[in-house]
Structure formats: C-alpha cells, structure tokens
Amino acid sequence: MFWPDVIDLKQFYATTLGEIACESIRSSIRQIWPAAKGDVVLGIGFTHPYLLHGMENAERVISCMPAPQGVIHWPLDRPNLTLLGDEGELPFADNSINRVLVVHALENSEQVRRMMQEVWRVLTPTGRVLVVVPNRRGIWARSALSPFANGRPYTFQQLRNLLFDNSLTPLQTRSALFFMPTRWKFLLRSAKYLDRLGRIFYRYFGGVILMEAEKQIYAPTKQVRVQKYSSARIYAPAAKPVLNLKRNAD
Image 1 (cartoon, helix red, strand yellow):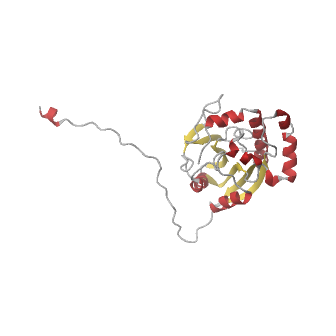
Image 2: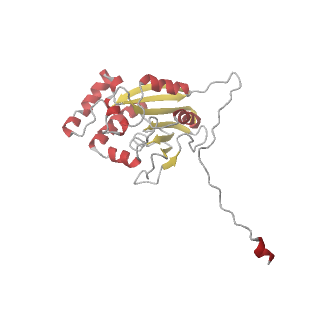
Image 3: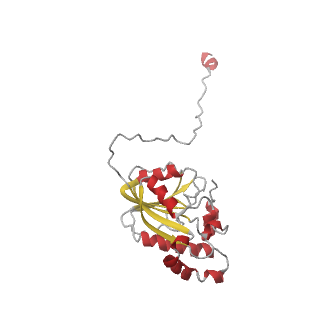
C-alpha cells in the first residue's frame, strides 16, 4: 500500500481546498469530542491539523506518524510532540491512552488488523478511538486533488465490522466533505452551505466517514490464547574487536 508523503500532506492542508476540508472534518470531530479535559490523546497518521483544537485542556497530546509516511516537527511554535513509529507496534504501555484519533492511516496501512489491535491495547478500559477514513461512496475517494484518494476507502458497514472484529464498539458516526474537491475558489465559497445541507440530507455520501468506538472488555469464560507478534525490525550485529593472539604472544 502506498503511503502519502508527509510533505505532500502538509502542502495539501496549506492550500485553500485543504483549509476548507480541514475545517469541515474538524467540525465533525468537535461534535463527537467536544472536550478532552484531563485525557491523554494520541494521534496516529497525519493528525496535526486536528489535534490541539478543542483539546487545550488535555493532559497530554502526542502524534505518532508511521515510518513510511515520514515525520516532521510539530507544533512549530512549541516543544516537539511528534514521534516516528510503527502503527502495528505502538511504543506505548498497555491502558495508557484515553483517546486515539486516526487520520490518513487506516486506509494506507498494510497491517490494518494489527494496527487496530494495538489501538485496543493502548486504550484505557473506558478509552475511545475516532477513525477518519475516505468514504467509498463519496467523490473525494476518486479525486487526485486530495490525499483521501490514496489507499483503501471504506463504507459505513465495512468500518463498523472492522471495529467490531477488533473488540471496539461503535458509538457515534458522522460524515464530512459534502462539497466537490476543486481548486476553483468561487465553487469553494459554497462549501460551508453544502456541508450543512449534506449533514442533514446526504450523510452517507460525504467524502469521509468519522466513527467513534469504545474499547470492549469482556470477562473471559475460558482460557484465551493471545497471539503474539515478533518485532518486524531487523537489527544488524554490532562490531566486536578481534583479539590479535600473535601480537599478545610477542
């Protein structure tokens, strides 16, 4: 699966289309997560445009960017809150994160199931995940003008099944991006109006799907065998000094 480069993502969100798209998605995120007071919030993928907005009272905000995508310093005017990691092997302790936001990640990952299992592992027992993915029925999944055309788009049912299969119970669903992806500014002027209209009448045809889910914890009725993964990293052997026996004998 081809991951969009972090520089391309940053440049997209710096355009007029990217700014309007960001505000549309950010509005839906605020509807689901109006506040994050006292929470530890983790972003997976390229979540910089959506973190910190409405999360000023969070205990901590962290951005984990997958290695194939690349990493940049963020935020620019503060100490770095970004790390480069493997979405299938998150460098966080069990039950340590209250909220996980996933953007520009699920549709691009080649290890989707493993990634969602890692999300489940790091979430607290009452933790929640909010996933943003391209909508298979929407026009944004077919337009090369945005990074939402990369990777594998989802339908509402496909995303719901994926969350259920990884012990995550869907709670709320929203859509965003009900306007056409275009560079023509006079068409983008009606974007907010089309967004409001689409949220009421065309919720299944938005450009992206937002789905919140809660971590499930069931009391085991029998011994469950937990599948363990070995690290995908390959470590080169360290160099060792060679003992020169002839020199020592002299």
